[in-house]
Image (cartoon, rainbow, N blue to C red; front, side, top):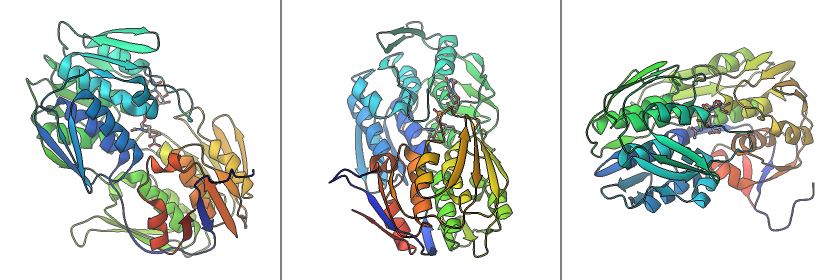
Length: 427
Ligand code: EPZ
């Protein structure tokens, strides 16, 4: 694939072992619902530990469009939502980031009306929102889907409801919580998503005066309150970024100390890495969680990785683990149970020499001793991270374009990997 001239790319000379210490950034998948939640707060909120991500910038643009005053000061974002002037999210902002759908619940919770364009699918396949719509309708929201827009109104107000989700959808759980915190009465969510980002959202909202219990379990109860004030909150560490750096250490047979990595959030990954032959330890010496990985020994394939909702193996870590599995002795079977089309990185990994055969939601990876550098294109956020991971191992030069995908979720992945010994640069 001849790379177009002038296209920014990440250039990696593979073969260096990683060694050193990295700070894990705040969680992208927590910052987005937290920024949405500030719409509910009649006052100023400050979120700390916010990395520089294009998705976070996009969310701030939506807040500004609604009339909230957003300001970033280093890793802190303050949002003053005292006056909202708008309840519509323009299509171009919705198109920038499909997870903007999480603003729906908060705008409805604050203003009882909202108009936003249907979030499209994405590189991972169709991203339906039927569960979001079902739940909000049960809470008294009238939703008309016309001309590619959702026109939502709750003239009689939003009331609590008993909601059972057929899938433990993260976004649907977040939207229901955001709409329910100021609803009349109590809402119960059954088969709710249990991800740490749900717990973080509930913790922030409770600081603002909400009454949420059970976050992090399959049953969440929200007792509606009159109004929410602002609050300060530190965003949890990004468990998928931590997973990415663990894979980078393992694929280079190196060792890393990850600071501000929450061991409990990556509990599904640890046994897989240990099965491969890595040693993983967790410390809490200086009051901050630290996870240490040493992958010095030759690593062997873990045989099978099956993604599932938290606390199972996270789908977002699957691409980076596939890159790692490509270099292990033996065969690894990946079963992707969450998304329809989440093996697009397999083809690009094949350009490096990886032996991967994909059949629908199953991918079989036969480990090889060598990968050789190539020109690659990132097609989505975690697929791009997988290519960077594999390039660290591949002999020679790899040049990866499609960097905007990676910038959505990684704050300076190049600078961080360079800090621990990778031969990597932006070009
Ligand atoms: C969140 O997406 C994350 N994004 C995703 O991370 C993550 O992969 C996903 O949860 C699963 O953990 C953010 O938090 C911003 P879902 P979300 O609703 O909320 C189906 C990344 O790389 N579904 O839990 O969109 C859906 O099609 C991103 O950081 C319905 O059928 O995921 C999927 O198959 C990628 N109807 C499954 O549920 C619905 O109404 C899980 O989706 C909603 C979802």
